[in-house]
Image (cartoon, rainbow, N blue to C red):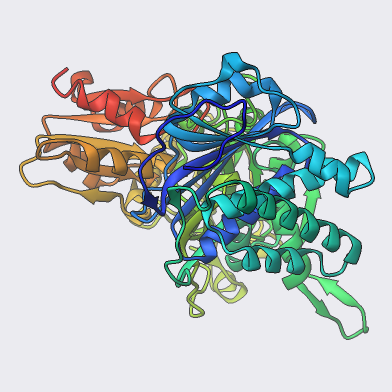
Length: 611
């Protein structure tokens, strides 16, 4: 057992476990803890061990509590867990809360430069006291240095306690700060300060710790917003318009960074030219207006936002739908309503996105479950938008978008060519006697379109008011219905072109589970733990729903629908589209703002299999 602080309670420690544990780091926002968290994550990942990190941070500025959760699981269970083997309690404001989250037999690491209130002690938790503030005060001169380096010293303690290779952590610091010698020296000194103190005072490593499994071959550690931005570059997007909003801001920031690197070329005039345009608009409505205009002119254009921004974009989404202009919108969902909790996760934009705008409007939605699918589905979104000449919304969320996920490495087929759909070129236009914008639908309801200005024949009016198949104004009921009926047919036709749902049928299973997006890992883990013959599983990947979704519901006595919102929005959409009766689809909901856990899913399913 590790040596404890004199103020600590003592207990039998948790059993020895290699590469199967969870830790939580409690800190204060604005103290530089994020870089330390990333240092730990990267080290564990490079040892070939499946790992995930969840950043739970406040929406307000510096000074409020922040937490970072790391789950290490050789078995591959990297969904969030709510029970922790080691709590790193560095925020006195949250000590009481943090201590309650330690598993029985677990450990709590704290700064014993100040005494711990005896009332907080638990007999079934081992308390590890390290005088971090005092050690840093003795080594570093300024207050700022002491605050920042305390986090690195804490990382040094964890390196020793968890059995991480200190040389590898040191090498990462060298790579990060090689151009700033003084900062590098300070970081290395702080790392050694914490590491050597832990080695001298505790039995290291703890009973739960890491052991190298090898290099993470074929795996990457990436967040969904970065993956979306990278995919937009690969898909040929050249225009991005946006207004900053948590948690979507880094989508366009990363897109701009990548474009600055890969969409620049030397011109004949000897100057460097850029092949992209990114505009920060005055609001979300203007941002989408820019995207609609750029797409109408032939560019691949997109915007990124979250729930409040989506609300502001409703009118122009309806315009793009009715005038049949391709648009890609990335919605990184957060907790609402109104401003809600900007740094907490929900999947509560499903219905507003599916039917965004007034009147009879339906949009194509894609639901990625992780950053790898963010990459793949973003490319698919641009192709679908062009092919079906309509808005396509990528429905990510804060957990997928802003947290680091370990996923199969992103791959690319160099033979890929953008699917621009029925976009006519100059020669095709000149061969036509007449170009009727909405007048020659194919079997899927898609008509020809043209980039304005190519030829005189391509000229046509694009109007949001009633129009007929010639794009001319009408209020004639039959002519109006002809257009909107075709739009519905076109929407339904898109189902066959969406990413197929993920389906796993269990032999003899009478009950199924349906979920979407970032719920995937937690639901899968829960189903593994469920006693009995097991339940069949389906993960929805897009809307409109393909026939496989209808078939899955029909072949099971009933299905649980697991999602992260209060009002069972996926269930409602399934009922609308499939006609399934209410008792056929039974909601299982998590909407407190934290990523869903397997324990939550298991509790809601295991105890109510017949309700």
